[in-house]
Image 1 (cartoon, rainbow, N blue to C red):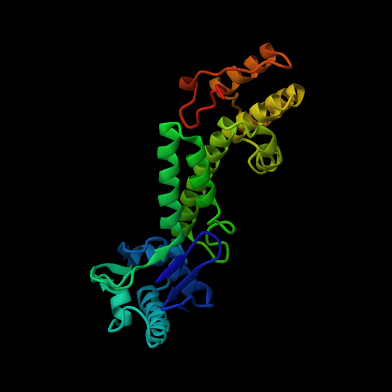
Image 2 (image 1 turned 180 degrees about the vertical axis):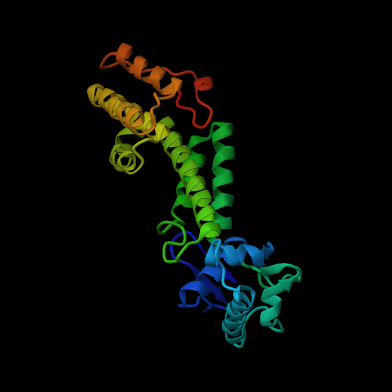
Length: 285
């Protein structure tokens, strides 16, 4: 089985798509896919489909959607390929209280193994984070860039999302942002500030209150000899935070602004690494 979540929903068995076109059936498959190899309670599926006002027939309707998915799986399994001998009920398993979408054949002995862009993303990101901790910024940037390349758009962009999927989508977006700011941090450490400017310009417009990205943008601008623009970026963020949230920028970002002010046009602001928890913005490179 192949599961694609990081963009459009794509789920296939034996290379044959089992992704339905009907919106609610897609929702059911999407929730099962994003939680592949975990039991998804029937109550979670009901909440996803109908929120707090399910029809009396909700459980029966969920069963109908599961049957429709199994029909698609059965058709895919008829194609000769790996994992022969499986049935649709082996792939989409009924368990006490819910259902489980099995991403592999589960026999552990030479059968087919499932692939998932989420798992590939998490694996590559973890390698990148470990490389960051070890100070290998080239390796960190390479793995994190490869991880981020797996995203073809917002997660499950073509699926109507209820409460359960909305939570999963927000979680995935947060993991993407974490990988993104760590990749940018690694590339700043490698002195690639000029090549990052165009990307950061777009990102701070997309995420106008994201302090990490703003700090990275300020550093990239200052290192490129654009001190005034770096200070302007700080002021825009501050104005947005005060206006929309009633908050001042974080202490580390205020310290970065003061360092840029005191560094002068050709100086290099130095922010101690301990002032950052999520991203190390030390300018030692």
